[in-house]
Image (tube, rainbow, N blue to C red; front, side, top):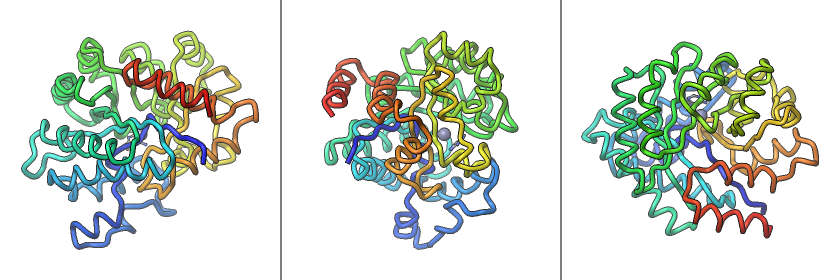
Length: 317
Ligand code: ADE
Ligand code: ZN
């Protein structure tokens, strides 16, 4: 089995329905996973939110984090960056710090047992008060050398703006964290431009609508911006009408750097290997799995020492 890497996986979209039933005594698989009625990002996010009751307890949040690494290893994943929103897990006893510690414990235990190098990205959400985003950027900075490598903004792009959160991105950048931002998924290509120029993002979550604006394509190319493409998720959020119409090949043909990722694998009931296979079917033969993995690792927020070791494995495959 070929290697995989994911730079864009959400913890909240990785709650196994079986784990939810086991720990909560309630089978909500139908609520947690996509169906035909799910046609917008908002509806997709509402599905993900059905899992929130589980992760309000520290041991449950750690278990979900651990199982993400286990699933990654089943997909022959070499390296994984998982993002999560600390504010989504504090309606029980946990403080923001506790959520980060629980997640990092799960990742560390998973990395030890399964051998998948795993790092965390902290996500703020578009609908949050910008003051909360600043708290989250400071929180991310505090755990920078303990497993947190980046800062992101996620949530409902169709209805909320990213620019009010600019200060939090400055704080994260000053602390030496990697910067990525969801943009151009459920919103216009101008949001991709804003993420690059105002939030200082070196990577864009999705960003598929960039193809609609030549100026933004040029900005992204000049700066070597890397796009975290999540093919099936784009169908489930209504960002793309069908997989045949997915613009990943067009992005590559325009000279953009793309990577393949799974976004919310349990919500979408997909696998990371499956997403690489879909990408392979959509792309020209000239774009190989190896090319995609190199793009991911070069753009990853892991230390240069680990990056070198992992790149060597890919060059030898
Ligand atoms: N949170 C989880 N999945 C997301 C997505 N696809 N877009 C924005 N925020 C998200
Ligand atoms: Zn995402």
